Image 1 (cartoon, rainbow, N blue to C red):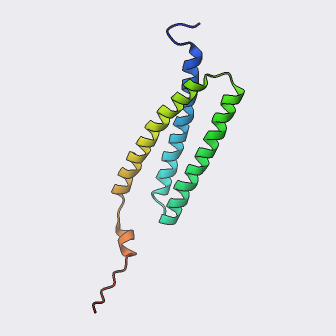
Image 2: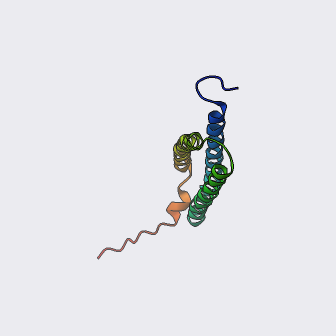
Image 3: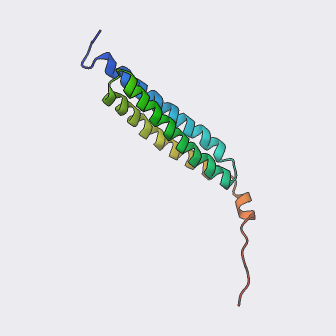
Length: 118
């Protein structure tokens, strides 16, 4: 059952960590898609509140998995952080591109310029 250089438990552990990070990244993109179409206040609440919630849930989940299973902790965390870094980069790029394609008409209407000259 242990073929190759690494035992199967290392691959399973890395896959579990990568799966958790993938869910984290998917949640971030989903919330970002909703937030980018919202008002500035709602945007900040969705992005920051969603981030805090995702981090909290992810840390609890990783802690429970590491304490209650026999998965390899190093492989699990390595798989998690590799996919987490890729997901964070993808999230930043995708949301930045979406932001640049939004119409700016609503923002410009709310800006008042004082044209008084002394």
